Length: 329
Image 1 (cartoon, rainbow, N blue to C red):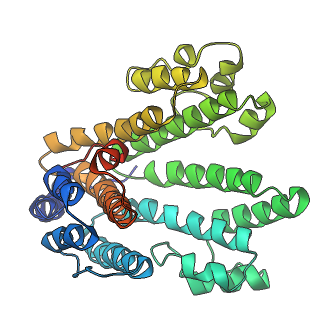
Image 2: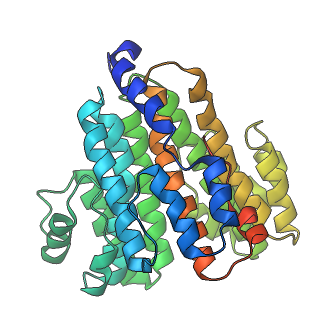
Image 3: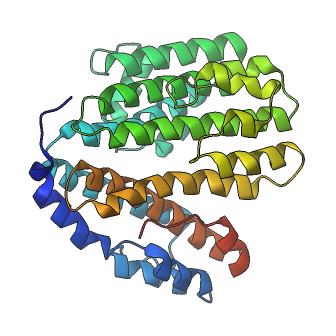
């Protein structure tokens, strides 16, 4: 574990607290939901530091979101006392890019879907993939991509390739976060694994899928052991995922297995992750503040995209509210 102290985060924490006021938040999200049309909703984002997106195409929206994420990460990385805290965040984009490459088999069309926010530049990763030369790619990522590629070639099933990459992603996340000065990030990763496994369990049961598929999908490293997750084939979901943090999600999951719509369950799963992060609000300074802010930045982009695309598609405000998750701010 790192010897960095919480006081080393004093400047970054102050910087983050000042920036929190410019996050989208529930009030501005509601303004976007109530906006008359796409352009009016887009104007609200200018209050958060986004460029004027009125009249923007879907591609221009994605470019603006990607630019916001890229610029902030570059600045954040300079200020963060523990670089691995940012590395842990970037892993998501490395493995996103891996999935794009494996599914697209290195073709030109998927290249526009690659993110520049990972540890490895998209061009470098693409070249490594096409030439099968991995010297400039972190070893764990290289192994995961080659295994996923082999799985896809053997089974022609992209879902199985994705499962392997997801396991590798969370394994790396746990390894990186365990080197940090706080267990807060590791706790967040373990909860993410629990939520991912709960979702897999509910979908397998709801779809009357074979237990073997769940055993293939389940991710090790959560608070609920991988072997315990598979007990849902003999016990109620609520009996397996009985931890207090997951109890409400498990109850909704059991209802979904029995035929209820998935929407409430999916929303509860997302919200339990945000609720974990809110404990960082009680911390004046420290790595917890940084972890929570990185996650809230991602949630802001997800919410803004959802509302804007909903406005463009004529989705009613009440439907948009049902789709939105709890906001960190």
